[in-house]
Image (cartoon, rainbow, N blue to C red):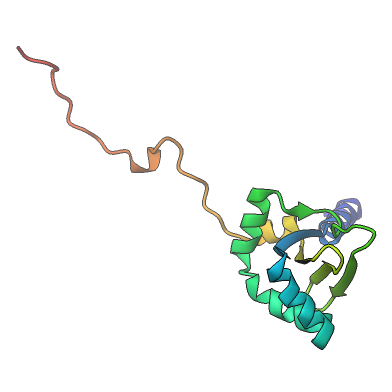
Length: 141
């Protein structure tokens, strides 16, 4: 393998590792958000992140976010939002006391996670279940 190929492979690997996206784990508003906002006020944002992380079901949460379009290049936020990042856990908490909502997002690398999965290709047109059938002469009257 030449150095040129090796260098290109390293750059490609670095690009994949750098591509990070944010997916929505949970978004609460109204009375549900008020409970979490109280947790933030009394125990701090880290306690709220820990509480909201209970809504993260791993792969199931990721798949739901991808299907429903809740995946973002950057943390979605308005100018009046507070954003707290937990780098170690890969979470971001956004909240707004004035508008009464709380959101927890999780960071992920879509290409790296997809490459780790071993997914069988879907069966096309049922060919995997195809069996030979005894042929008949057709209709008889």
